[in-house]
Amino acid sequence: MYIYLKGINVSKKNLKFDSRIVHVGNKIDETSSTVTPLHLTSTFKQKRFESTEQFVYARTGNPTLAALEESLANLEGADHAYGFSSGMAAMTAIFLMYKPTDHILISRNVYGGVFRLVTRVLNDTGVEYDFIDTSDLNCVKKSIKKNTKHIHLESPSNPLLELADIEAISRIAKENNCVLSVDNTFMSPYGQQPLKLGADIVMHSTTKFLGGHSDLIGGALMLNGDQINSKIQLIQNTAGSLQSSFDAWLLLRSIKTLTVRVERQFRNSLIIAEWLEKQKNITKVIYPGLSSHPQHSLACKQQLDPNNKPVFGSMISFELTQKKDINKFAKNLNLLTLAESLGGIKSLISCPYSMTHASVPVKEKQRLGISKNLLRLSIGIEDPDDIISEIDFAINHC
Ligand code: PLP
Image (cartoon, rainbow, N blue to C red; front, side, top):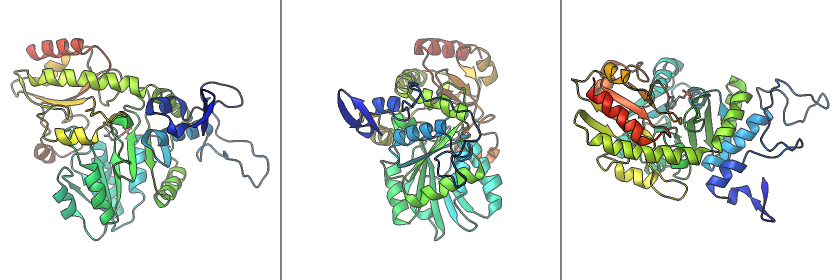
């Protein structure tokens, strides 16, 4: 993995983040294409019956996916990376590492799909689990049982943007021989590097910031450690849940512009969150970049860009007063599209209560603070003044 730069051979690993995202996983092959080609084939010609070739059958691996996985490993500074057909397929691969009576701890306000996977699928396999408040280190310590094998964090969490202290929890995990995984979807590798903070596995819904254009579905696991690696490699291949070549190729293209996209998205979000906080008909604004966020100082410590500057993401949750009608509010929006998902260049708005977290029981939503009037913004790269004018108009006409 070497690149010829200004006449010297430099290991790509020594380049800075913004150079690596463009060049790693983008080898110029024998056809001299400057972009990794899209390999659409299900099988590969072998030279002999006892095959030793790298690529045999496309469910086991293909050159476009291999290039993507090199790029994914680079993004999080991982030894190994695996591309999956979705974020949920990547999550499933993590849980498939465990057997009945093993116990897993999970952040209490994870993405609704992960909640459903745990309570309706994992539940029937005999793997034990507890959803806990991972923003409280004592709660994490107290929840560990003799059979606890794994801790899974989502930080910031969806949609309440609750943070977990990854470095402190990685110490607790190591002391108790537990594997630590972190869903880093909300920050992207540009804004948070969980492996550097001691995690063993980083998970992404690449559908979001890494894809960045709301045009693909994908998932990724980036990890260190030979034992975990051989398990995940076996699961990805055997369960047949790997990323398709076409989506791998789209994702490779998107990763090259990660910095330029998210820098703008993060900057816009701070401007919009600060404005929202001053509005009369809004009862709360949740954004880790605001000093009013209860874990703002933890965000400044662990959410760092490649130059070690604190960054806060582009997800904002806010609650309209009960007297406002959220459907009327949404009718007056044009730039903000009412849609599930997040992380793309186009701004989106959703209502977690009835959309992403529809599968979470009402009582649980009430306990967590996911009310009917809580709205979640995913800020894109549009001019923030236009988004602000639109929200201002919508608040005054609902
Ligand atoms: N993790 C988080 C934080 C998410 O927001 C999502 C989807 O919204 C997922 C995981 C699941 O990813 P996918 O939709 O790519 O399966």
